[in-house]
Structures are given as structure tokens and as C-alpha cells.
Amino acid sequence: MDIINENSCADILKILADETRLAVVRLLMTGPKHVGEMNEVLKIEQTLLSHHLRTLRESGIVEAERDGKAMLYKLSPLVESRRRGTTLELGCCRLVFD
Image (cartoon, rainbow, N blue to C red; front, side, top):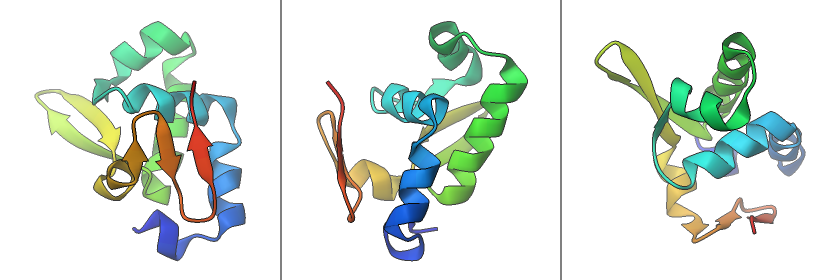
């Protein structure tokens, strides 16, 4: 799914308005991560993290690929292509992480 073309600005902002999802995106801007790696930083229940990861995958912001028995999560190529350092250009707005 193309987040910029298939979701309205309001939809994108609703998805990223959640603190945990925003934190996941910020973590993935530094490179692909397994759930365990993300959980070391976020310190939330794995089921809750999985829920947020599913929402991010369904929106097209994040992708997952099998890495042995685990799943490796990364920003989707479209989102990654719109990243400039710590900034994400989402079409309707720009997110800047300090």
C-alpha cells in the first residue's frame, strides 16, 4: 500500500498519533529491528507491541520479513525513500525527530 497516495492526511496522522507507533517508526529509522530489540527500548507488553506493528504494517508504513523464526521489521520502501536523516516527508506533512 502507498501510504501517501491511498491514505488521507488525517488517516496518516491518526496512525502516527499514538505514542507507541510513533516510537516504533522512530526506532526503525535507525534500521530494521526484531520485536525483542524494539521491546528493550519501548518496554511494553509484546502483545501490545504486536498490535501496533500490525497497524503500521496494514497502513503501509512498516514491512515485516521472516528472519529465521523471528520477524524483522523495517520502514516500507516508500516511507524509507521519503526519509531524510531524522525527517519523514509524508506528503501531507513532515515529521522531524530530534
